[in-house]
Length: 246
Image (cartoon, rainbow, N blue to C red):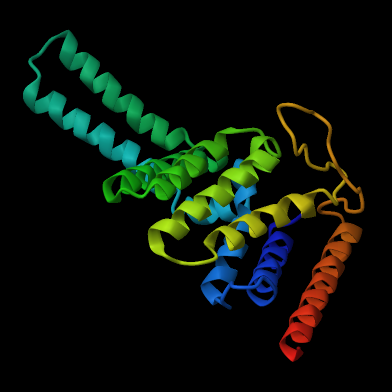
């Protein structure tokens, strides 16, 4: 499914959790978290909606390489004596600069997500938030996996829900695990409606579970996605209104 459809389904799922699960307060932040979580499995695709957002400025990777090259060149020029080490220093500085220029599109975004994830891990360690470090590991590792592989499994859903559970304990925000887990699960269920399906139980089973209704990107598939989102939204709205009336 397209990212916009996943986001719509995730937000609707957030409304369902907020409006139908006993003890979970109605929370716009929780609904937003469900929407965010519904996009998380596609971090394994460099051109996904969430990959582009979390890699907020892929140019900062290029600037990082340029800064490293410039710093190394300055160190070599001012501190290293003439000789083999000096030549090696300038060669390494030039290599960093050329790498920064050569990186394009998906490769830059993967590195941007890696850096973003590592910084999140370090922030989690500094503030002693295990959930934040686990989130950072997920963000750093996911872009380097094959699309619809381990991020699209029941095990990744459990991990994401556990991260929400730890965040709930740390922050005292009741319902984080519900919103996070349900949003993530909605993505896998939605992708199971496509012709490619989802290998829910990797690495124990390569079987792709699917109800092949949608061909992602086709005109018919786009119409079906809109219809599914609209039908799901009306169903949840009806259930929430019915619950409020009673």
